[in-house]
Image (cartoon, rainbow, N blue to C red; front, side, top):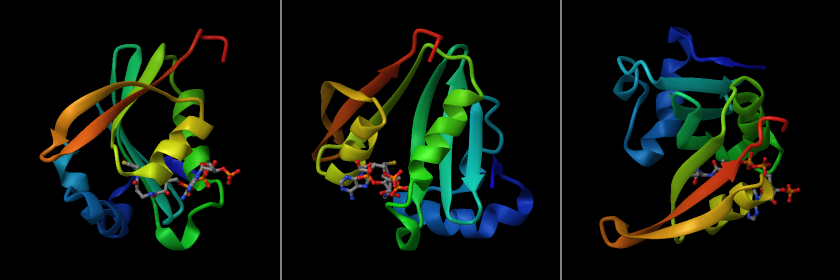
Length: 132
Ligand SMILES: CC(C)(COP(=O)(O)OP(=O)(O)OC[C@H]1O[C@@H](n2cnc3c(N)ncnc32)[C@H](O)[C@@H]1OP(=O)(O)O)[C@@H](O)C(=O)NCCC(=O)NCCS
């Protein structure tokens, strides 16, 4: 089931977020931040600022990847927010994530040189005409 995170999810959620050196507590006091989970298998952390969303992280437990969970998490935030676009940054080497985002309608719009210390970031966007 897809829903907002609760305190009983924090332990397993932090296990997933550890891959990116962050944790639920980093976001709990930020009024723009939201965390949505799919059972205890996947998580999306995003910021909503007025009518646009920035995805911070989307992570599916590697045992459950390629089963459509990441796509369902994205669909949930699209269906539950009235937004004009979603943007994100992803490492240039993260081919599986780039393929995943392209599969879900995102386009590469810019390269951010050395965004991740020595590695370039790719800025991606999906735009909505509010009838999507
Ligand atoms: C990126 C990620 C969230 C995708 O989640 P997922 O649940 O496995 O993705 P889905 O099953 O919804 O995949 C949808 C489509 O994305 C593409 N895709 C997903 N994983 C892919 C991979 N490893 N290689 C190529 N394409 C891939 C495919 O087109 C797939 O459609 P298909 O199954 O019909 O071929 C997951 O791989 C993950 O957690 N990666 C590690 C964390 C990460 O790098 N997150 C992104 C940066 S924050």
